[in-house]
Length: 474
Image (cartoon, rainbow, N blue to C red; front, side, top):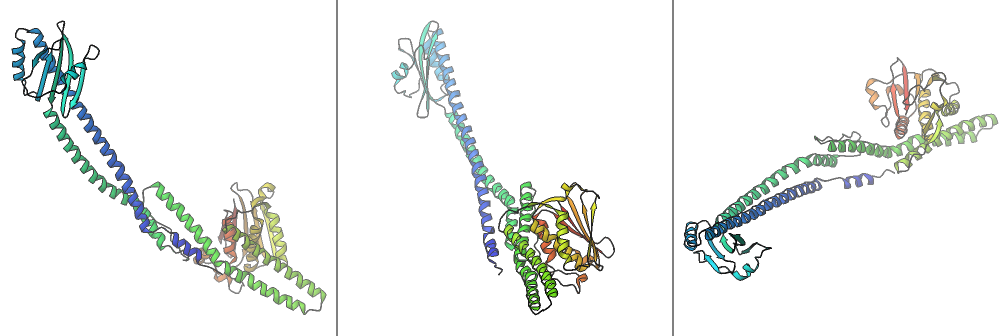
């Protein structure tokens, strides 16, 4: 009995739009977080580098002023104090809130700037200076402290400068405000761009999910997924997904129609077989009984072949690998023709080879003997049923490098052009089948066998009143 449980499970597992929204949000979060973090780190590095540059540049200016003051004190000793004081008054506005102390080699104070700013732990700072360490720098709050040991005109001087870099801090504050503004603008821009990009990137996936939501595997006509995308990966995904959907639909379709195969291809022959055996049971003539039993044995074998083929296909659908053997195709055809001769002893099959002498290795094919035997039994049975004369031609073409070609040709009514696309559909029977028993399932089973082996089967009617089936193996 056919069950729709696989279809329900398939629908349950399909992607929903809500799930695609989560993917879009993840893209937005990952992209935005990465860009914002990189922006923040970059701006912090810029701010830190400028702060370091400000400090170094300001301390250099302090050092230059110390050197100038000591040079004047050393050169003009007599008037050094007054001259230094005058310079101090002239340069008092160079640094906001500055204090400078200069000591001789005995650490006696030679000069003190006019600022009231106090320097904490002067002695401790002086102790940091020596012949090996002539430079010392530190901070007290926002004040920069520079201490140097300078030798000038064979005399040693100690100097300490403490100052506040008002102009530098003003630039730092301005830079900070600019960087904060840039960061805010970047965050807003990144979020907007991220939203746009995430929508654009996930739009094809969302469209594919929506199409999957509308996809019904029970429909006879299933439209392939179509997504507008310039991405190679998405186009490849859609292509592979369409192939998967096609194979899934074919598997579900074949499974769904298996019950019809059993009902029509098995039930009816079994009923006929039982009726014939009941009729034979009433016969008295031994020769008639022997002939009838032989005929029924052939029918039972044919029925067994159909059952074996269906079982093999069911195993493949269940995930088992295809078991193949090295089969000689012409010998397989001879065996099938011999079996069919019991059904219609008057029908003649003519077998031709191209070229006339074919390399025996070309006649061997790796395949499932059970399935391929059923394939050609269906095609040869059709040739018998649809021929208007008791004759058909089988051509085995071994000259093609791509694979072996087997052509089965018979004369009789052909299909109309409008019927060609329906030839391998379930239960289809053309107008040329009028009055011929059958249920339109043999070719469906044949095509399934061909697909399993990755072969190809086609129908041609390029000659008047001629039906031709071509099986390309390879």
